[in-house]
Length: 512
Ligand SMILES: [Zn+2]
Image (cartoon, rainbow, N blue to C red; front, side, top):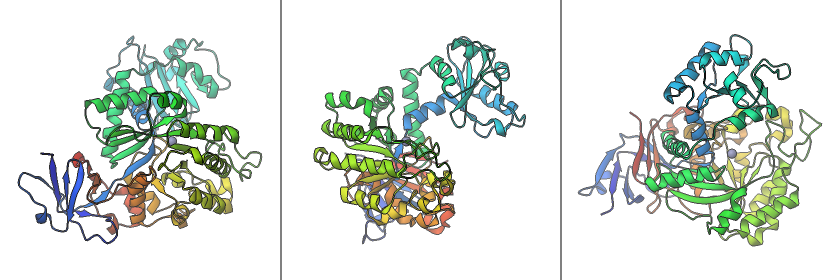
């Protein structure tokens, strides 16, 4: 007999329109068998009972766009140096990390750290190679700045990269390298092994459940990340459901192997193929129709000429995959929609084209998205991080930036996401920051119930499927919260702790 669990004494919300109040949920074989307003109606002999203590459970959430495996690798491999305020603290964190990984001189591994900011250090200067030499003698050591555009290496790392440690790099102190000058150091850093990739995938899936996600759509950077998830799946069902979006570089190979969007099973399957059309607003590389307000000399740039993007979208379709395209600026949105429209006849049936980010829109773009049935994977946390949007775009144009309520009201299929590691992998932070928007654009916040549906049902509808509801037949996937989000102020939703994460009726995370 298939495994069944009765989750009782809970408040399951939101429910499908017209459904009666639900206080109990019976999960069998991974799916919802029934909901009831009284748990006693569902009690059966031999069924395990889990008492939710009167807490509220919400369906999903699913993170519809994150870089899960590379995030796992980053967390496992690199010490987190964000917020470090002195060289002593930097030393302490790196030594603790080396100890955790049981590193010793000569074992071939490098000690890595990420996220430092020299301006925060009380010493008021960059760390140098000499500072780093003192931390872990004999072990190559490399730390990257929070922006990713600068690093500091110790003597052993510089030598391993074939560089003269005493050779100056512009006006920077010894060991500091920026932009292209970082290349040799990255090149010399040992590549992770397959065992490390597997460990990264395992850790990241477990972490996703801990932070309140029942599933993710993960952007895969290369074949080794995919293999890590496949190897993990071979050990058993994944802790959370993972849909893998493949990089365009794999489209020919994956297509030739017969892989298609949807191939796989309930916990691991193939999603879309990902293309880029532009860069980011932060770096002023997002392609805009008009110049940047805070730098009129540029309007960013497209990654490919429009014809090339159109050719690639068609190629993705011909290979049998759904397409997703990174588009941030309004010009990028426009050429992406052009490409999707031109290739529409080749699109696989039932798989809506999706745009990742859809950061800057105007009424014409929104109308076209609707007409072409294009969905968007959105990142509520971007609105707070990019507080400078009104200066960068000008107040008028910024009204169309992260305009998620506008998209929602227009009926565009939306799926919520974090884009981790760009933003924190944190379900309630992502949900809460769409309920409560920053000061520069409060009008684009959405009602709590709509946001929860965007993070659950939305992640299915953007795949051309139905799911993510408290409804018989859907996966028994939900998150139990410590407080009812309906009873806290909108700005406090993001602080609600996760009590339990249930995937396929199995408890994948439970707070102590
Ligand atoms: Zn991303």
